[in-house]
Length: 145
Image (tube, rainbow, N blue to C red; front, side):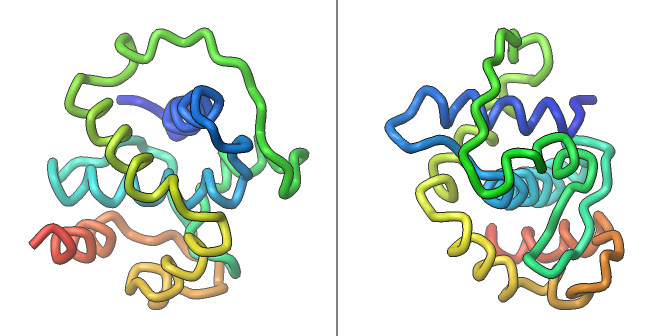
């Protein structure tokens, strides 16, 4: 199973290869959340094992947050030499690419506001509790219909 750090590195690599100005930690957190949610909805299994918690500014994977918190709101530039095909299946790469295409176009604060409207965060808002996989799965399954 991939780790949340693998997913973060993948999104950072995608942002480095695009026209955008990098990716902030807040935006990265929301993309990780959407990747986990849609993977749960489509495959009934988590993409990564690390928990996602409900924080004041939306869903956060604490382990990834702490790795990149020194960047604050600045773009994260972390070179990646990873062979992602050795980490992710072709289906997972397709999912990550689609999450990035759909949600990566939005600014970090827009993504924050979007997650605040979603039940997985609203049920746990601001208390740093873990958002259970079943709640994420159920929410994202409804958005697939």
